[in-house]
Length: 157
Image 1 (cartoon, rainbow, N blue to C red):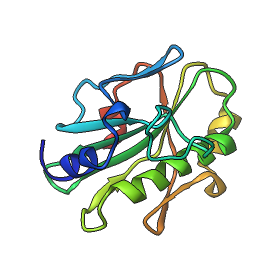
Image 2 (cartoon, rainbow, N blue to C red; image 1 turned 180 degrees about the vertical axis):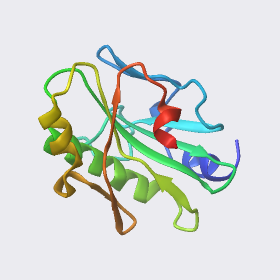
Image 3 (tube, rainbow, N blue to C red; image 1 turned 120 degrees about the vertical axis):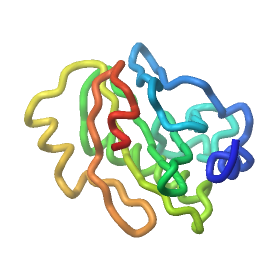
Image 4 (tube, helix red, strand yellow; image 1 turned 30 degrees about the vertical axis):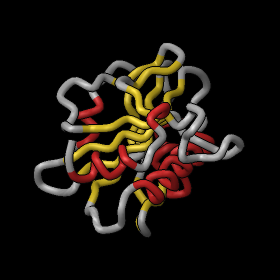
């Protein structure tokens, strides 16, 4: 473990470090994911977020060859897809990343919503609206949508 991943891992309670991205029948595949990486379960006691704070499910942090790394808050949804609520949860994950990722590391930021059910065209359009973009280090990014079971690596391109 080196660089960004080592720094984040050192600043997180070990009870929050997990090896997979899966909640309530919804999952993201780690096949071909950049390595090394660390996955922080933000729902676990000891999370960098307070117990009553808004939160997304996971924070994925990985080293990368051409930059310091990747930072991706992930929210897994099996039921109703509410873009505004998901954006708020991903924003909380971005806030956790702001505290965990040292400012001197250049990272690529990707907020990702993983959904287990279907989404309508209207829901996908709503997710793309600027009001639902997620802010990190002074810039905003559109949330990416990913079906359960797909490769996380495909969203990090």
